[in-house]
Length: 283
Image (tube, helix red, strand yellow):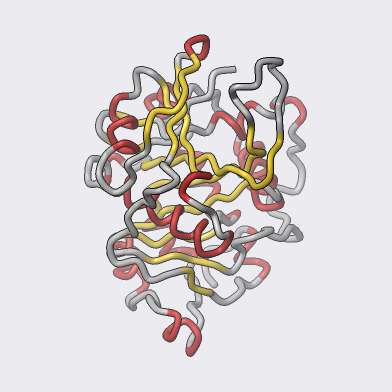
């Protein structure tokens, strides 16, 4: 299949959903128990990130219905080369990501909208979150959802291997994706800020180094190319895959991406009640 990472609509990030939509046939996806709360997120279950304009939170079941509405929009389906899923399949996909050891996803929230809906500020320092861990408010998050940002942890592959065999070396690489789905928030630099937040998270939480970061971008996706190669990220063309009409862009080992504006670090939130984590709209 063809996979495009960080797909854009016009000048805005709409990130690819192809990997987690095509790795498993839709007919293989179970549809029962769409509101189960028994799963545990492997890495970022109690983490959130704050920057100048954004708050990144773990992808919860109560986000799925809104996310599903995005993925039914013809322009997003076209940009991501995706097929629409049923709501039940979307819930199953969220559970799959939540339980994965090698996939990480955050829902991107617009900070001002979130704080307005909450009627209070999001704790934006380790000191604040340590004194009073943030009690997440699902209804406020739904009002502030504008997209998502993802990372796939993949084995380090030697692309120059003449025998066309995968060679796994020490360490792993992190493939990045971003989607700004709400039209009103496109073209405002929020896709770049979301990617910067994810990179800062990977660095702080996993020790990821600049040379381990990559993005795969379609040849016709000029906006995405500009985002990843532009100010704040500075990825460089590393390899072209003409048969797939895409290219791999990598972050230079010697040049770390800029810290996102207003970066507050990786912070800790309080656990959600089981009902809220599964399907509820209030914590």
